[in-house]
Length: 176
Image (cartoon, rainbow, N blue to C red):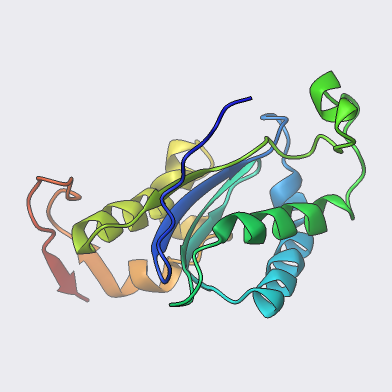
């Protein structure tokens, strides 16, 4: 079994990618209310703030900020995934490895996380969230995707320079 090392920083801000097991599924958008409910229930039990989010048919990206005295994002994802999975039907095919562990086979195991280091890193990951529906071929403009939390920011600001990389240029923003 792999030993994954995660950088845990109390009060840290993290970018996450979480995927469904079936990459052809549209379960996350067809059951968006259930996903929202599972997230709200988790937030009541284990508080955190959602700085940005986009839900695609088979994966989601979120940026969370954890409380100052807490760094355990894994328990939160476990609670969200479990709460969601309890209320949707099992897929037609469940991988044997999931079946052996008594898993429903809805989600890929684990998730990907990245600790946000600074303002440029935050801007880059906000851009990734905003542009995810375009890269997935779902819409032509970010504002056309209904399952993204950044619509209001897209309308108020316009990027006129490249999105920064760690060493790249600063983003110039002009308020509309």
